[in-house]
Image (cartoon, rainbow, N blue to C red):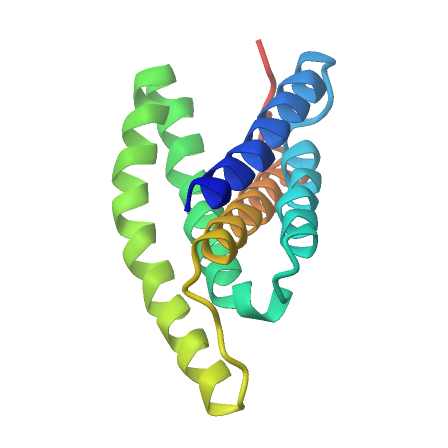
Length: 153
């Protein structure tokens, strides 16, 4: 378990460092976060975990964080930083339940067609990380295309 925690922590540290560097360089927030989703997927491959085993976790993360962007942006626009934080907390409670519903459904469907999803620590952690980055990055990119200004500083 210690090796697994160190492995996942290392992937998370690389994601955080590259994300901070890219955003510090002034790159667009949505696409940066979206592209960072490739790192935990690469981590799954390095750990020799089948990507299909992480699909329910990726779906959970994508729905959870993709939807979470909406109340975070709305709260931030209406009430500043405190509004963004409150929107994120309240939104997280709601989106966790929505995403959990889909995660369970996808897991059951995969079992029904003969694909065993994994509840193993590395697969679950990296699957959720990839999904959260893809969903959040995708939602922020879409918001940018819709004219919502998401900028750093």
